[in-house]
Image (cartoon, rainbow, N blue to C red; front, top):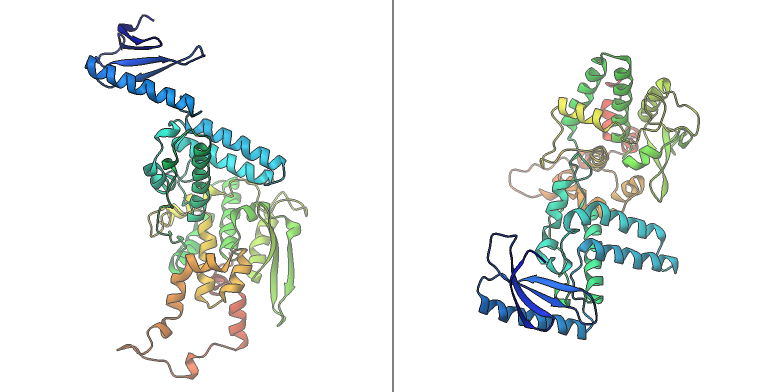
Length: 429
């Protein structure tokens, strides 16, 4: 090869040389693989010939040890090992050891997150620091082109796949056993950026003005739907995927045990379906959308484009514009709010109104633990009278005023969101 200069053969199949196409004077070694027409070239990172010879012999010995013990001689990038791992998981799915859906999720995480993070890095160079820095990298990059808050549970799931791929590489002897990740980084659970009651009122007021300021018929249509979408999400606690799947046939009306009207929504996420109840105001918001929608058949989606097609983005850019104008785009943590913030607002308001965490978990289609983990701060305020009882300068309420409200209006309040109860009379536009 023309770029090889100062070549010296140390023994058959092992040479050291310099490169004529680089500015530095460091040495390289090239080792011929036994019984194969293939070579391994390694930079010796020294310009001293004597030291280069010693390093070349050391590397040659390491290569022969690897060959003898069937350890790969050539490093693989993480993306290649991850591809092998997916193929192994596909074989398990074929044997019905795991589901094909599980394999698709693994493949999606690798493609969308892990490969951009470490895909082109040699598997042997990935250490504990890369593992520990993943949460910060993941939150910085968020989801898609617009940064959004990524939940701890999502990061933990992705890191589980990251760790499994490294364990697979150890079993295949691509890397030594000491490269196995230890534990999981302890990162503080991020509080969900819900809207406070004052912020919600500001959003409500600004939303009406924002709709009226539309200068085109199409803009007026989109703003009207997006504004009512916000009200529906804050008063139901639906997840965005559930809202995307909502059809007109999924909406029905009923009464609670005391004869009060309720709206019943049959919602579906990726895998599960459930029913949730909402106050009558949600029915009004839905009817506002139906009255101007071009998609009104039972199987048509509720949230559509102006043309009547399903709106995949759920008015993301419109809502971002509304939040920006209201100066509510970023929450207390400094992270841009997303559509999920409406769900967190719902949970916060319901807990502050005294809704039992078990019933709220059922309503929201999640676990009691998740509610406690992410919204425990609400309970501290709600039970301030108990927490501060007996402390100096703290006045206890008279006994009868400290009891729960058992009146009919009190029960009605527990059946509706705090948002709807405070705003129903104000939001008639």
